[in-house]
Image (cartoon, rainbow, N blue to C red; front, top):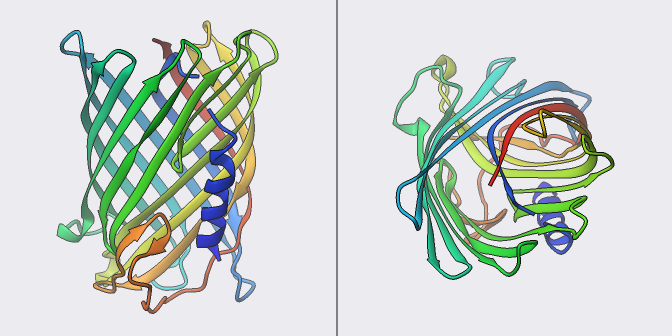
Amino acid sequence: MKSLILFFAISFVSYTVSAQDYLDLLKLSHSRATLGNIDNDNETEVGNTLLEANFPVPITSKAVLIAGFTYENTRLGLDHGPSRTNLIMTRLNAGVKYSHKKNWTGTYVLLPKIASDFDDLGSDDFQMGGLALLEKKYTSRYGLKFGGYASSELFGTTITPLVGLWYKSKNRKFYVNAVFPIRADANYSLTDNLSLGANLLTSIKSYNLSEVDSAFYVQEESIRFSLFAAYGFMDDTLIVRGRVGLDTTDYGTYAQGDKVGAQILTFQVSGDDRTRLNSEFDSAPFVGVDLIFRTGI
């Protein structure tokens, strides 16, 4: 069911979104939700903290080195295993953005990561990903993006086609910036400092569970859609956003070695005959806050 929700959300929003004349150097987000269970009355409090940092370094007139890191911590209760679990992902983002020819640029990034409960780190905690994205700039107000993302996960290899758009209205009050199905932001400025908008974040990833000699992993399939109000300080260098929305994240627990092979978006190429060890999570409202340090480009 969650796979179908993710597919239709991606399909719907891809037609509606996305201007990018800025770069988020640092972003700290925190959200909270109470997720239920579709099979019983069990509930779990879910707290999610995300920290992203980007450090672009020009190396030639055509190339910019991309360096950064991502840290994410999700704390929740699982039916199978300890009562409370920290699912932690730390990732390095290392690559280059290159100007191929007039109005065409390419972004190529390696994404090695460690994803687990960080109880007893080992080889099963390490995964490797990569992203390639081409961008065509048509005018100073809009452009298109397309490419792909792939990652080795504990359930197999996930492959995600990417398509994106950035757009800014002539009066500069409305902008959209998106790379689907990963993320999208739509924003309308009511004043020089205050704006309203909508945000979409999705992810498909896995975490190794090593606590108390566990031999399991968690597969996360996540969609978080929210509406937000944002206020900018210091000429929009520092932005504070309050969000309220719907969290449809599911955390499936499986035995180590139980795999599906290749997966495109949420669809398994060879089918999925794994035995799930916990019940499916239900969707629920969530609240969140973002602190963003932004610079113009």
